[in-house]
Length: 435
Ligand code: EPU
Image (tube, rainbow, N blue to C red):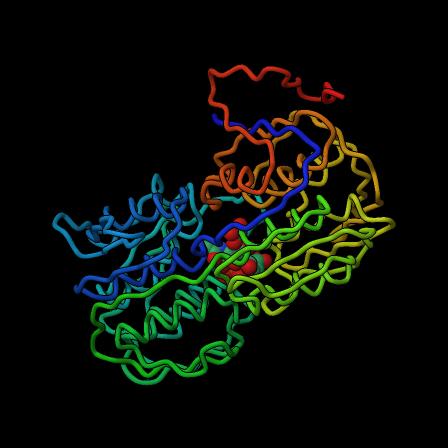
């Protein structure tokens, strides 16, 4: 298993371009199941979750190929399975559940393995299923699979009991081909949901209220092919911008809609960082003292849970006490203990993390069990004294495109090591870093 070897401390300076958003590309890939015509998607990030979903789509009879530029072309090919997403393909990625809506709408039937336990909490899909049932589907659970069927879905009014990103996306993809009008209330307003809605409109869907919490969908008989550019990855971008504030650096992430990062930019400004627009993106720099800050995660436009771990790494260096409340997932503080092993002082109290800064961090071997927690450890390593080895980089590879290259562009000393490569000067777990 690959790992990163990071030598700190370093200061991030320079410009990187944001990749396409993983969490916008995933539903876009699933949406290609809604038509027999080719769909061309641009700015799809080369990350492992995309490879996983392409494999699942291929199993479902939807082929994909790389075209000139960074375009991916999706079109049906032979040997389709009858709408069956098996455990082996679903277990590694919860977002596989996104094929439920389009398969049901298009083929009248889907059978998808229930996503298993997850490192960041229980994460049920009850709202996806309640919504599909409201659209007229028969939903059955057996042998670890969810089986949904309906000859044709019928428009309805459905209110999500919880704001759910992939739940909103699944129902939107189901509703576009339903008979009549569907009104979805209490929808997630994340930019990734709006990006999917724009792709669906480009494919011929009729959707109103894009960007709001109520989506009104006028069902159509069929969708056609389209070409669509995926939005920039606000979480990837936010990770590098937090890195700028953390290291007292100066980073521009180009080609990014600043409005998608509003809550993060406000929080960074509150920490004493300078935030501005530059190169069609965002520039963050800090030269003065890093100030503490209290924040809580919330659905968009609130502070994203996917940046909570990275922000916690930042607060370990702030001059004073910060609190971070996680309101979306019940088990998303695994990075806290690993940050503690690097020298951070973090006390967990239910859904609240109390971070006492500033504490000097020192390099050691660390490991995280989810994507964003791993990113927070990489950021911490940038300000830690000596060598940090971040193990199980496959978590990062799920969602960050060429992270080590981008960090090197910004001046960090990062290398990727494979299984057989001994790290000169690496340290054993708990053994402390090189001073
Ligand atoms: N929830 C329910 N019932 C449901 C669905 C969700 O109770 O039917 C609960 C969840 O347990 C959670 C909350 O609602 O407590 C929000 O979950 P949501 O459904 O919004 O999460 P998701 O759609 O599974 C997406 C992203 C996550 C991101 C969350 C929250 C994708 C592919 N994944 O997950 O991204 O953290 O929204 O913004 O879009 C990541 O990229 O690292 C990542 C985990």
